[in-house]
Image (cartoon, rainbow, N blue to C red; front, top):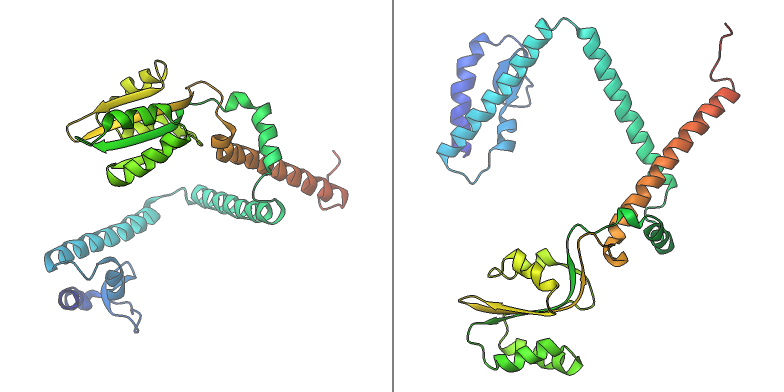
Length: 285
């Protein structure tokens, strides 16, 4: 890798020394110069990994050099040929001003606003703005057991899954340790149906969705696995999202609202104070 770079240095630097009139940084190894800008060996070191072969190194170096040279040529040509520089300077100044103001506002927000709303605030928002928290995907609670094809005592296991009481769950856990491929108990939390369907490749999404309204137990299999899904509770698309799954979204909405209100109030106070203390001077017409 380093041999290649030294070789590249000899070719490029040797061929360009004759036409270079500007002085490069003496503490670095220059490769080429364009419009007074120098490309140095250490810049190539940063973009070319040391663990690739010589052919890939050459290709990557060539692409980087061409891009570096082209960017400079385009910029320098544009500066010479673009006539409306005043408009560009104005746009740059406006953009710089916007960036500085934005950074200042973010600093104020971090200093003066707490980072997260309280549980009470979130629940109050949940009740007041429930129309903004409608589900866009089905959620379920239950359990999913995946067995290898030909697993023993499938009839008993099916009864345990369908029953789902404390004793059955104990039996399922013991059984899954010996024979199960996967056992996911989520009767105490909401899970998107799409996440469950990803674990059941033999099942079409439509079939699983249809099962939500027909029964509380769904079973299918493929050539390698057998899937048993017990559905305890369902929240369907268009229904109000459960509070526990919507907390992140609610917190985001509340904090956005608080930030907007804070910035608006701060700007109003800034203006009013400036008017009152004479910083803003109005001329009578």
